[in-house]
Image 1 (cartoon, rainbow, N blue to C red):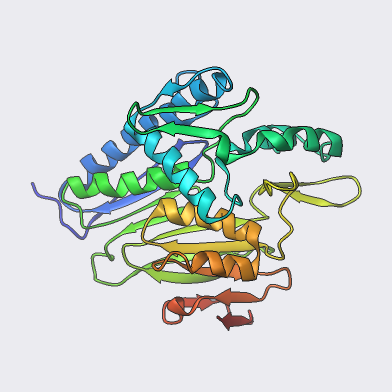
Image 2 (cartoon, rainbow, N blue to C red; image 1 turned 90 degrees about the vertical axis):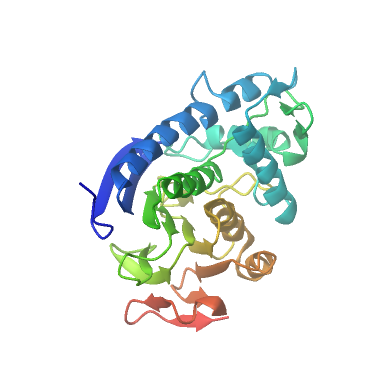
Length: 320
């Protein structure tokens, strides 16, 4: 019996350290989402720096000693990470793992000592990640350096999920990886997908953006943070140059792009860059648009979203 192309098949599971939810429409939607879950497990085994069987774990363990042969997927993610680092002048940096470990957001309640941060900082430098395209190898030049794909890996996975569902003849689908949303086509009724953007300071939504076949990724200071005894708030998006949480005058950045990997990396870099430098960075990607929020909860929206973005009533919106 053929499945109605307008009937949704949904799945939800844990992967890459976060919740994942998918929806697809079509005759082979169930098989497609089963394949997506399998791909999520495969990529996690490949990319997670915490799993001893992963290629990133091996690369980090070999830092300063030898290069490691990697799969085409890992090579692509690492080469794209370097490209985003170059374009953002180092604001995006996949070698930030030693700093992430030092801050230890899962357990910390106080900021690390400044001298420890200054000791770690020299280990964060994307220029020390050496790739050989002919041998397809990767190497970190100095001992103690390590890669964290947290700012790009989920985007890569999301793009892969959309490729997989298309292989099953699906023309309408979406995937949500911990708040990073990818869409394929429009909804079966022809209307665009409506993706809600979380309010950075309240329960509920700031607004929503309508997209067709695009990805939406958000970076915000509210996702993971702790407040110390002095009442100071420390969020998890670290500036690779200072070693401290970014203080750029933004509390939330959502990037809308054709590629989830682009949206993922750009949202991080723009959050660290701040409004003006961030807009310059977005301008380097012709298909990318953004929604940026400052501490006063003013919402800045790039003009390409003027017809597809709506804020909740009462929130000031400035198109730029």
